[in-house]
Length: 353
Ligand code: ZN
Image (cartoon, rainbow, N blue to C red; front, side, top):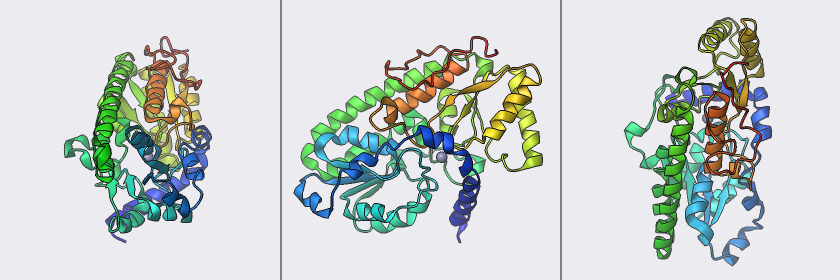
């Protein structure tokens, strides 16, 4: 095993230990991309349809590809909502889809840990594009817990993720040069929407009283969000199975929640309920009420066919939920009046109830 393998092995083991706690997120994040895959029949269908087939790993990529490709390509997603891309192992059907694809998009930066071999092999035969390749070194984070690797969760910073869009547009243009103008037009439109979204998230998070601008969540997916929008991100993950150190860390977190009068913590795929309860009870025993501010989408989008099942909707949901739960002033239905999940918690007027 080389260093990368060792890193992923330990990460996979750690995440596997947390699998039992992922149910809440799994229940919330329903398959976003599986429907187009199901609509396929067999290999013969490919030749019947003149459209090239574009296969994507995670939903956050598939959504951007669909936005730019429009009707010009058949876009298929492999990793459904609620499925952790770090742990995802391609099925036999996925391998067939990848084999048959005309173009493949993936995140890169080791997000799709268990698909790396298949993607590398495939890249010898067809265009296989890591959408994060358009990012500059300074856009990328290299937090200590990633052991010398870049943090792959770039989509959490809308302005950074919007740099993936031209990479997608240019690969689509190479595949379908006759539609260049169309792709460019859609890219421009999308980038405008992304830039308004970025502005919305910035102001929603900035509306949280400064001392309460702390995002307590367990998964390590929010580092880019924290950097881009000026909110301190504190994770619980990593302490869940270490009883002694875990207790100390939880006590430290309780101190911080009480001292800074932070009224909400967030549920998301790898947060242990036990730890969240420990935080809530610890704070309560000291006269400070903390509640669950909502469930955030981290590595997967919401339900297919809903606003939250799009990249923009997913980020809108996260930002609106966080802002409202922490005493900020985001509109209940988000940036575009489209949020449908009951996730935008009632505003915590003083952050304490
Ligand atoms: Zn992740």
